[in-house]
Image 1 (tube, protein in one colour):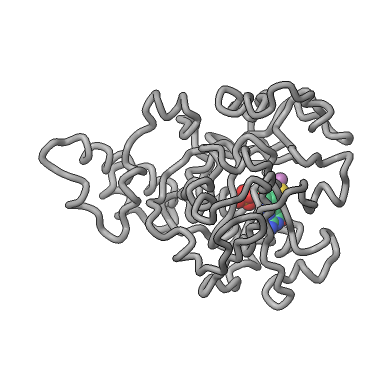
Image 2 (cartoon, rainbow, N blue to C red):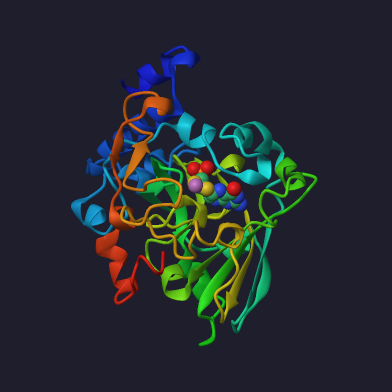
Amino acid sequence: MSLRQAFTLPASQITDEAVYRERRRLLAALAMSPALGLAGCAGAEAPPPSAARPASPEQIKAGLRTNEPLTTYADVTGYNNFYEFGTGKGDPSAAAKTLRLSPWTVAVGGECAKPGKLSLEDLIKGLAPQERVYRLRCVEGWSMVIPWLGVPLADVLKRFEPTAKAKYVAFTTLADRKQMPGIAYPSISWPYREGLRIDEAMHPLTLLATGLYGKPLPQQNGAPLRLVVPWKYGFKSIKSIVAITFVERRPATAWNSLQPDEYGFFSNVNPDVDHPRWSQKTERRIAGTGSKLFAERIPTRLFNGYGEQVASLYAGMNLKTWF
Ligand SMILES: Nc1nc2c(c(=O)[nH]1)N[C@H]1C(S)=C(S)[C@@H](COP(=O)(O)O)O[C@H]1N2
Ligand SMILES: [Mo]
């Protein structure tokens, strides 16, 4: 489908995904043509230049992008886990639209030389959004391939000058009873919290996402700012972050506190460590052809396929003990 066809099709037949894919192809073609620089077509609708380039072998090798079929925009933004808005997969897209995104402030503190309470704009000021196409593997046994926009978490964290005592980083989601209907139910001990070891937080694959599919992050996906840690189960990728804290001791995290024997602190994707109630050997890939309910089952890979990039972080650790 050409871009023109995409825009002349009846609205019902145009998917955001089709438009996005076509745009990427078009911009890639333009970028490669010596006569036409990207600047000339960088309209408000255009994704950032990084989205225009097809994944290079180097990017694939570095884990920054994959050429696996993308999950459709409709599924990425319609099949969600965001318990603050309800526990059903359709609840977040139905209920989260009212989450107020501006102003949004993030408190950064703890073991660092330069703590502060910053607006989102100031937090990521000067950092150009990058596109990352990552696999996302939920502990429930399904997975997606999502084109994110975001900045490396390391680039943000360094600005606060963590001290030698900063061994871990703790993250907190907004917990506003008035805006989040799910907070009325004690499914999780609110606010939702997550944490990473400092070396995991500083790893180049760890992303603070502000968008997907070349657009701002929708509320149901954790707007305006969420973590994406592609080699860990999805619940580590905490949404709608309001606090980032450098700490010396391993911080308490939401799912681990609820069921420590089912959800480990590390929660690295691992087909050889089953969840006590189900196998983790395979996953239902919600991407490519077919409806999400009957999506193809594929083998789950250690570290979600990012072992080449991250296995060294866990050298000498027994991954069954430290699950
Ligand atoms: N604050 C918060 N963050 C959260 C969750 C949540 O319920 N609340 N769910 C997690 C789970 S289980 C997954 S699989 C991913 C899903 O992200 P997505 O809906 O953008 O695909 O978000 C994670 N981050
Ligand atoms: Mo999940």
